[in-house]
Image (cartoon, rainbow, N blue to C red; front, side, top):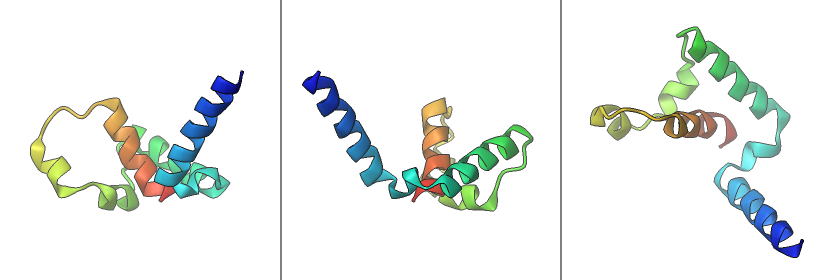
Length: 77
């Protein structure tokens, strides 16, 4: 039981250090708005500005995890 508590607290602390705005409800609304707009092909300027130029220039296939990271960086930092 202590092992699971240790693991979950480590995951939470790691996510909080990466994205400090993770616990603010307003940021979750931003996250859901960007996801909804991206489904309609209306990407937010805030999300576009978070994308690094090297990410765009590489031209590799973008997987789901990298897309979620970009949106999370836009809203939770």
